[in-house]
Length: 180
Image (tube, rainbow, N blue to C red):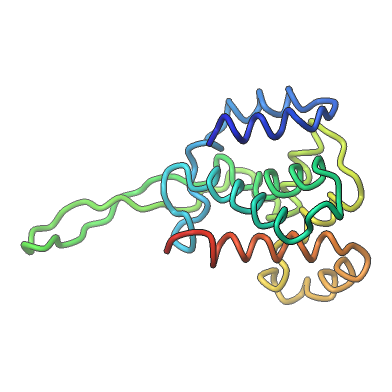
């Protein structure tokens, strides 16, 4: 999966893409979960989720946008999750009634800048995003944004159709393509 991910990013030939790829190597992107418990909450879940969003976005939009845009939006939309999860342990009884330590993921965000906005900021340190890519990544959470942001989500979706499709692809990947 990692090789496919890197190959797709490189295929964009975006100025700075190699620096972004090198940056990702220094993070936990390839081993991080996609969430603590909601979807792909396993080692490598974030990488798998990003590739699933790519598959879903391609399916939804076909060739309506450039392949580069589809790759950038789908593969990098959750960059905000790098170096965010850590493993903790809790006591739980096993099937024999013996107490055992069970690992679980918890959020320990050392860079609390939000979700989509944090992804945009991190990506922008390495490559230039088009306005449409920026909005699609920033608002990919759609209705899962805090309610005070819902007006902004609606305005963004009215202006940038790709943002709507990015949200739909994220939902498709989470609830249809990924095992529960």
